[in-house]
Amino acid sequence: MIIASVELRQITLPLIFPFETSFGRTTERQIILVRVTDRDGRVGWGECTAGEGPFYSYEWVESAWPTLKTYLAPAVVGKEIDSAGDVWGLVRFVRGHRMAKAAIESAVWDLEARTLELPLWKHLGGVREEISCGVSIGIQASPEALIEKIETELAAGYQRIKIKIKPGWDSKIVEIVRKRFPDILLMGDANSAYTLADVPLFKELDQFGLMMLEQPLAHDDIFDHAELQKQIKTPVCLDESIRSSADAKHAIELGSCRIINSKLGRVGGHSQSIKLEQVCRERGIPVWCGGMLESGIGRAHNIAIATLAGFTLPGDVSASSRYWAEDIIDPPVTVKPDGTITAPTGLGIGFEIDLSRVDKWTVRKETIL
Ligand code: OSB
Ligand code: MG
Image (cartoon, rainbow, N blue to C red):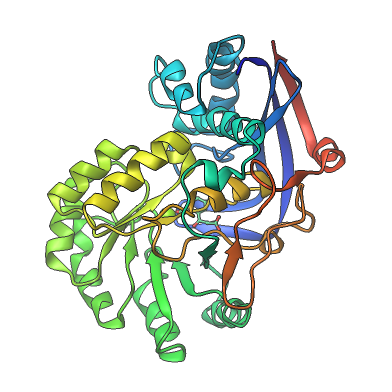
């Protein structure tokens, strides 16, 4: 396939609820969408998961846009590409910037699956027709508000509840939630808000039977996490620290975690996610698909990759209606009462892109030929 053009767009999508983590609060997403077009006029869509600021990672909208425009898109346009898996090699000369790379790489995967007349999830090597879903619940104004949110999500069928924690919103809150819901699959995500000085807190959390504790320590650390994992019973899950399959190998070897959260943007796209899944599966480390408050396009890509065999735990892929008044795909992503999403049967990502809605929310647009 030969990519004739790459269109970059930035859309502004207001969240229906603000989302708060230990690193900040988001009320409105700024999302870069990538549309690739081949010489026959076929298109593929990808989404960049870089945030509104460099808080979750150094990448953000204002780093991803020029990286895509100046380096990544020109590296792909006009090249004969044998398979979408080759895009990684074309953009390797750029160090890091994996979210920007994933946006364009995943668009090429969508295009390739459509060209081969396959659903993307089958083209990626997926083995399950439905994926298990959990939810990620941000920091709330009060424990009561959190309990109410959890009740709503459990009633909708979600199989696992993740609550965000930070100093001042941790052991007390976990205790309250555990008392109210003794049997649910419950976990906490600290987004790097703690240090090894907090080991006593994590030992205290051990009594609440959390399924896992996500990214408690520094965003780029695997050494201290290994020390922490030795001292606590709750499995540590790494998110921010795992940027590649090599990072996963090192972390597993060191004993830094027992579970890994896989994110398409963080690792650099589908081919890198497939490598990460393989590394973990071969070593008996369960993987689940994380989320980055994606629009329907990123959400659809997450559904596709989560059908791989190693994704054995419920992920943070949930219904469009939890985030958006109206999503930019048709139909929106819905979750069944048993807390699963059915992998779509349509070609590529399997959802239609509603161009009139995309146009309505677009705040900048540029085409690289
Ligand atoms: O740490 O998993 C995270 C959202 C933005 C940035 C980081 C994270 C998250 C979430 C939300 O937890 C997951 C989602 O519902 O998309
Ligand atoms: Mg996380």
